[in-house]
Image (tube, rainbow, N blue to C red):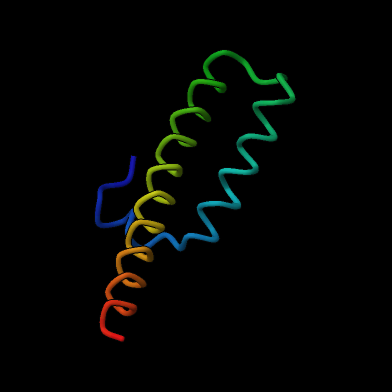
Length: 68
């Protein structure tokens, strides 16, 4: 698993695309239990990254609009 510093280096678009791929794989239902759990864990990690990136963007936008 990546540490927090490495997670910050992942671009939002890349994380979202990978998350969508994982969802597609999980929806097919063809993975073993172990693979499913592993993909789910990765999906949760990517979801956290996306949420953090969106929160950072929201904060920047709020800061910029407050300065107007």
